[in-house]
Image 1: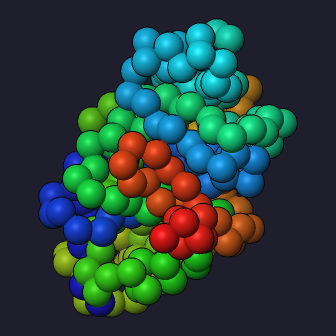
Image 2: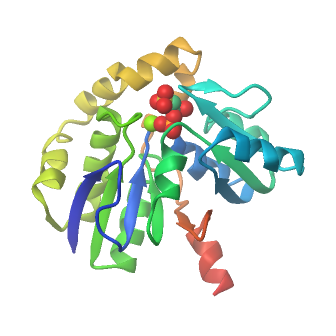
Length: 224
Ligand SMILES: O=C(O)[C@H](CS(=O)(=O)O)OP(=O)(O)O
Ligand SMILES: [Mg+2]
């Protein structure tokens, strides 16, 4: 298994895992307990169009919930259910929309499940850290490191660095809690989301982005 780590953009064209720990990856992973699919859209205007058609819509900019939308929050989405949830976020949904073919969505909540799915689907995987508006985000790097360690394969140097960075889980948790993203979210009243996002392996959900929509891997298998 060959594993490479990239920032913000998929470099290759095969299977990738999009990692946006705070919070798009966790929100999508949780939402698929409540919705059959999540439709990621890059801009608020597009989300509003869906909203006018009656779709439930979630999203934020800079962490602040768009007025009238559901928060980009793995905790808050659990209060809603339906066929499809439309989601627009500052980073994660934008990165998904730029993916060339298909992507798994990875976070700490589904760490082992997403690693196992990657091993099953391909002998080569690219982990893509979302970052924050073009800037490196430590929470995505550390989450990527845990996922890459769980996949266990031949790594490029960037991937290896991320694995070396996650040898001590309590240091990882501290760094995530002290991250710029966590500080911003805490200031906006989303402290519980940070604690939720840090939890490992609380779900077997493996979201798969393909053809503009995200569904559970088992749902895609059922349909094909
Ligand atoms: O809503 C979030 O947690 C972040 C906000 S920010 O861009 O880090 O300010 O968006 P996400 O797309 O989930 O990184
Ligand atoms: Mg983020």
